[in-house]
Length: 533
Ligand code: ADP
Ligand code: XUL
Image (cartoon, rainbow, N blue to C red; front, side):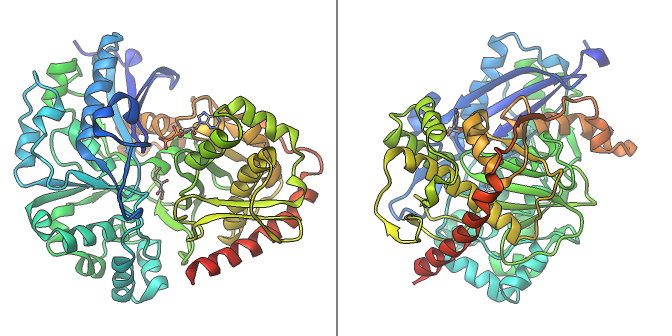
């Protein structure tokens, strides 16, 4: 039976690095259901750590694609067992960790189109992937491919002017070029290449889903202004690539309805729309209802900073992506690889594995850490491209270690100093009225948010759920159904709860952090130059 309009709900999913998450919102955009599947704990047979496999060279990082498929089986079973009424879902959308790639073997489309509803997806799709281990965003093994691509596109700045970014190791085009070079046989067996986002949409659609403009911008392959594949980039990457990638679509496109598999197995309505999936950061932009002038800080496995921009000028630092909620704007993004996993390491080493103790230490040491500064690049960082732990005392002398409480403050202050320094280098200015919108797992920690407010000297707002990517995709699902009537995203989510004030800067924060910001920028540049040698 068809659900009445007021009974309808919308689903948002997020295939992130460490887990698969889902949120359902009702017609008034209130969250009515949340659940998740943790890859390491709930799918131990894949032996991932933090959802990934770091290979022997320390640079190659992959995740088993079938683990993601099986996680979806588990999540939907959990929902079914909890009595979730799939028949109410009018549309669904989702996001994925950005840049990761999935290689569908020839014949997989036919399998997707004919899924037997009495079997779980991971059994049905077992033979469908030419590459079993998908490269993910943490990979930094493609320096050679990056150099070749920049050469073909007129240099780093030339490539940025087309694709929004200079060549980055994790960007999908460079990953595809590596697969083609190291495993040409597997590349030739591949009939379709998806991003994590469009792969996940394909599961629901029962057919290959198109890549959306916003997540497509993270590939070094798309002309972000013309919103088409950039032919010189495709040519420099691998043969027959356009066929394997398929078309690009606006992020609010309704791709079709859920496949009969979901109707029969879970009781979805055959009319339930599938709205194009996008990247997790674009999904978060939607979930936080980011406006021009705001700055968003996401504290997940990776930390990211992003902004809404109207008139971008791509440069060799940072990334410009198409905006996920309107094709008329863009978003700027900075990505920091050493986010939650680094905070967790310091928590384990200095706070007995407890966030409570970690918070206590943050409160015990005064802001500014008495002039001590730390940079904790456990894995090869993206912003800046440097590695290792670097600690400096108040006179800029290198030191070997800090006492535990100081180490805890140093990691948090260092991470936020880096974010403000790099955002300002991109041209961002913090002015009175600036809102910092925080999201991601660590945004549930008020003591961490206090440091964020102090370093930025601006109030920090959060939304009720730390899963802004999921929430944003539930919003996008709703918007997708009415976007072709000319309804703007901001109108479609007008009734959703506003971000709430979490913390304000402490008096005197600006005086403490202005000199530290300057010193951090200089010290980081030194560390970067030393790393290059
Ligand atoms: P992702 O979407 O990248 O998988 P999340 O945004 O869900 O990640 O964030 C997960 C991370 O949140 C965990 O790795 C953990 O370190 C962090 N986290 C959870 N609770 C807290 C807390 N109270 N304080 C600091 N960090 C936390
Ligand atoms: C963004 C990036 C990460 C991933 C994983 O460029 O690489 O933020 O999207 O969350």
